[in-house]
Length: 82
Image (cartoon, rainbow, N blue to C red):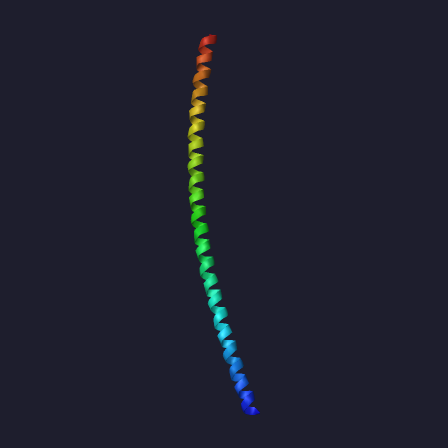
């Protein structure tokens, strides 16, 4: 009976260790996938930020051009009124 108990304990330990290794491998795989996803998200965020900065610069330039045109039109209007 003790021999059978010993064999069952060995079998149980073997199965438990096999499952532990499987779980560790799955977590390792998920960690790699999460790391890749975070890197991709970070790259996307950087590109988005760069695009937003470019758009802000373009809008700033456009505002300057429009303000210059408004000033020129105001000066022309003042000349006509005078």
